[in-house]
Length: 178
Image (cartoon, rainbow, N blue to C red):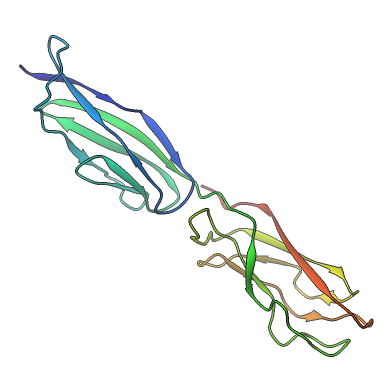
């Protein structure tokens, strides 16, 4: 028998977090459509900056982008279209939470948030909007872009004139291009 066709468990996948994985299987068919259960399948990922693949077909997201992962047996080939597009979860505090300062003065640690995917990997290039939500304080640099680690830091936060809690919120509107 000669391998003529490879059937994959799926032909595309979107992974929404770095280091996320998806297992694929390949069935090799001969010229008569019969399954070649002993056929060896070789997996390859020509764009390892986006995704890698193990020798058993386990695809791992490495970086945002698009790539093909190829399965080969003899002269038969098939490809999986892989898209890696980190999807952020709500931001979490990275610095400056629960601090105190005198009224009308800047807090000692500039507040920062982490924008990450569901596996905790930071997402670079996300615009985060910081807003004073209580206490009447002011911000310099109310919008900040996440760095390579996914952290956005606001400029100075000067507390308001009234005694009591001053709060700051962070939200994002835009995502980096894929």
